[in-house]
Image (cartoon, rainbow, N blue to C red):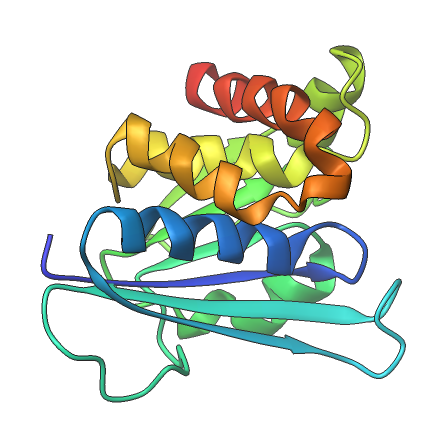
Length: 177
């Protein structure tokens, strides 16, 4: 892999920024150049949130992902806003529990993941973002499984260490989906 530009997008409170952070730390553990650029509306929880992650073998010129190779969307407004920005040949991963609209583009690969339902059915309510990250890992192999776990460990604050295993389970659900 030389360059991978990913845009995570959804509502505030869905763990959009956290997903990007885990991915960024995993890439750092992999020895890659990276940038992580969060963006959210003033409302935060319930408002719009997006996160640009750039991973490269060489220095990164701009941290902003305008034309993502991969778009990970967890709500309909994000799909409608960013669908046409994905590069031809790119990938769109959609939480189909929340987004019921189908992508009409034929020049991108689309993966529908029932992430919110999968998380909830497995006692992992609120971990749909990690299910989506697991699927992103499966589709792109942006790092090794070991470094993905190290990135997760680095991202979970000490006061929430009790959530580490649930996040691991959610990532596994995404990989298996």
